[in-house]
Length: 97
Image (tube, rainbow, N blue to C red; front, side):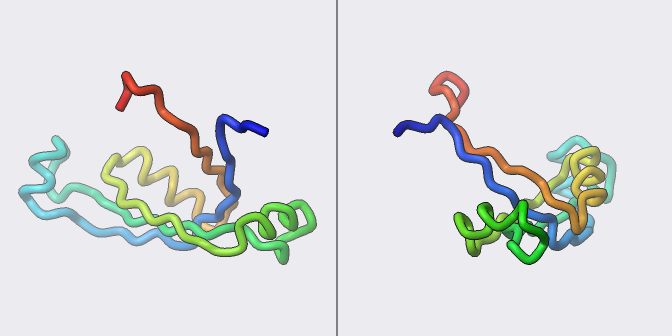
């Protein structure tokens, strides 16, 4: 069996907001203070409903933590707080790495 990608079901557990330093803001191209968030996601649990039982048994524990500086992406993650999201892992073509 060969698969080309894996999709995981996580929920956005935590969103922390903070401002970057002046040097970080200048490097990013955004005005000071540059917005930053830290997003923490955890695998869904079977307790959230029968549709999550298979997912939770395949990924019983884990964590994805991201620091996001793009304001639009930060707003999206903020709106997803407490909600389930899908994360797809797939190999990138060599010419894109």
